[in-house]
Each structure stands twice: as C-alpha cells, then as structure tokens.
Length: 198
Image (tube, rainbow, N blue to C red; front, top):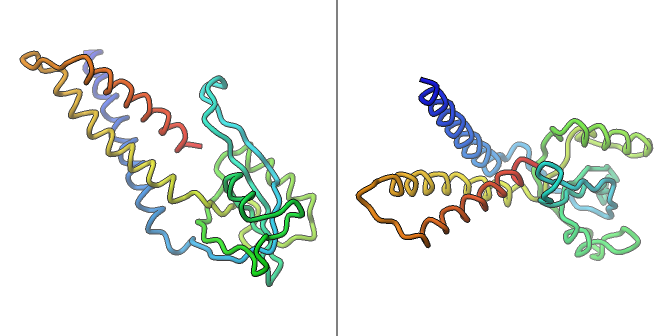
C-alpha cells in the first residue's frame, strides 16, 4: 500500500512539474502585455547573486542592473548577463552606441524574498530615480532562453518516460551505453531544472 501511495505521489509531482514548466514557458513566450521595449542611455550593476545546489554545486550567477532610459531618464531594474553589459556599456556606464541600447525584455516580479528585499534596499539609496515598474519588478533579458530550457525539460521528461518503460521490459535487452546515456541525460535535465527555478 505504501509503495502504491509513494508511486502515485511521485507521478503527481512529475505531472505537476511537467504542467508548470509547459504552461510557464508558453505564457512567457506569448506574453505581450508585460513585454517592454526601451532605449537605455546607461546602466550599472546593482546586485550579483550566486546560485548553488545545496550550497555546494554552483549553477550560475544572476546579475541585476539599473538601466536609465534615454529620453525620460526613468530607471528600470534589469536582469541580464554580464556579457550583455560588457558588450553594450563602457567603463563609464554609458551606452557604447551613441543612439543608446535598445532592449526588449519581459517584466516580472522578483519572487525570491531575499533578492527582492536586497534590491529594494539598494534602490532606496537612490531616491532621485523614478521606477515606472516599481522596485519589485525587473525586466528579464533572458526570458526566451529560460522558456526554451523549460520546454527542453518537458521534452526530456517525455523521452525519459518512454526510455524508462523500454528499460523495464524484461524481454528487451538494452545495452549499457543506452542506459549510461539515459542517466547522463537525466543529470543534465536535473541541472537545467534547478537553473530554471532561479
């Protein structure tokens, strides 16, 4: 009975994660309401957050910037890569292109409480800036990549289930290379899973 309950629970968790990743990815890619295009005159980093699984295995860093809109001088919190900043802004924090840096990003609430609190604490020290979206929201430059990664996980879950069924059939002999590839793929999918939850 306990085995059946644990199996049912495992299936429900798997289905829940499957639906979450599928729906959230589709919503991100089709959300036009929260999509903003702005032209930045300058930007500077306000916060760097390092992520790790169980505090041991590093899975990347998030960088948050304050971007200043060229015409209105409104400020926006932007979540983007360090490469994006280096490619578009100089050591003086001004756009390398005289016409500014145009970005299109998806606005979303910063859901991590500690990160949100830290961002609000740091932006509060810059009282002269106006934030049209507020300091609880940021423009996510990597929303497309994140959505595609979620879709990859969904696709991998389907392939994993099919492969697991094939491996469990006693009449079929599955070579060790396939089994090893399956395990390696599962590990990669788990890493992607934690990255997507950042």
